[in-house]
Structure formats: C-alpha cells, structure tokens
Amino acid sequence: MKLLVRNLSRSTTEADVRELFESFGAVQSCTIVVDPGTGRSKGFGFVEMPKSGEAKAAVFHLNATVVDGLQIRVKKANAT
Figure (cartoon, rainbow, N blue to C red):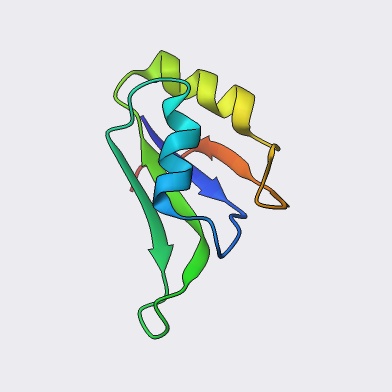
C-alpha cells in the first residue's frame, strides 16, 4: 500500500521517515519529493508498505503526530 506523508519538516530525511514507519512493519520504499531547482524537500513524500494491515496501522498511529516540530498527515495515496 502506498501512503502519502504530508507536512514534513524540510529537515526530515528519508531515513527519518523510513525509521518512523518501520516500527509498524516492512517498508518497501520511502521517497521525499525534492524541488529539482534547489534540491530541497517540498515537505511531502511517499512510503510504500507491502502489507496493507501494517500500512493501515501506520496511518492510524502516525497521522497527526508531531515529527521534527510539525504535525504530519498520513493517508493512503490516491492511485494515478
């Protein structure tokens, strides 16, 4: 299941996000979207977890938690 993680601090790294989600299960991939011009984080990213039960637990427990001083938002990513 692919999850959208929004409102990340510009200083939060992919390793930080991966570690946060790995406490709920296996993480297949973790990507923070960066601005191509500046190389800086755009403040959101995606986490993919192979087991939907673990992904749902991560959404339930991590949505609205504070990470690096900001309240993150986590939800299932829309299929494109």
